[in-house]
Image (cartoon, rainbow, N blue to C red):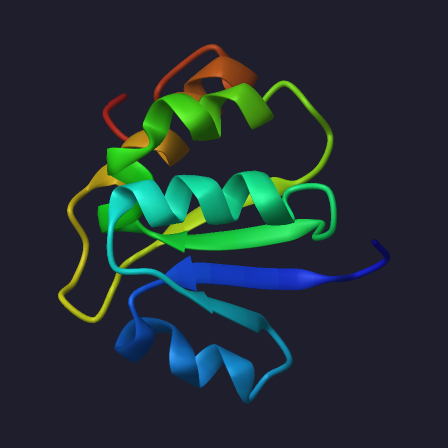
Length: 105
């Protein structure tokens, strides 16, 4: 599993990642994204997933957050961000620091 990185998303959003050595897994439905995540979770250390699919399979992703690997990171798709990634980052920062640094004044 050393250093293996993958990305799950629609074909257009993920193709560029192949050029930098990230293994692309093209999906077109949330069900396909969930099945793909389950299939590759033991093989890859880092799995990027586009926001649209990540939000749709949030329950599945949360099952992996208690484990060391894989690290699952949501990124915007070609359509842009739906806020899922930012929300999770804020939550993780608040959990780690005890305060939401994005809203604290």
